[in-house]
Amino acid sequence: MLVTREDQLCMLVTRANETEKSVYMATRNESTGALSWTKFLTLLRPDGLRCLHSGMSFLVDQENKVVLSLKKRFQFSSNIIIHIVGEDTNIKVDLHGANTTHTSPAPLLLSYAPSFVQIQQDTSSSLER
Image 1 (cartoon, one colour):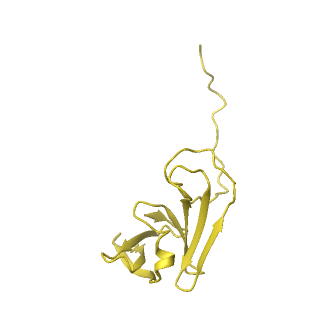
Image 2 (tube, rainbow, N blue to C red):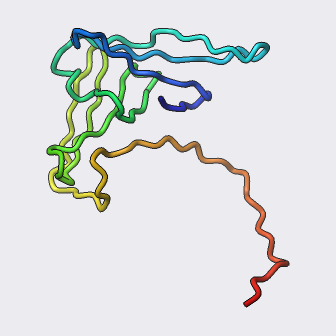
């Protein structure tokens, strides 16, 4: 699952026969707090489905109706491939030697929404030895 811009959750659903994957988006009802799930995107092409697997992290671009995911070229390699998959889109970007410094088995995507709110630091207290 993933938090998107409007605090929506996304879920990738794989059918048992693996020929279809769907992305569902949830929106929260302000008055009741209940979640409502809607199918956002359905992927039917086998070549675009291999890059999407269970337990992976992904980002959703609502405007372009695509899913962005990362995958290592080989399990213990640090070379990463970016996949951008949609109903009419299947783009694979090989970073050709742009090695990462982490050693996790699968790369993670994290969403971050910058804020203009400044965190006030308490400068009056000091550490005592």
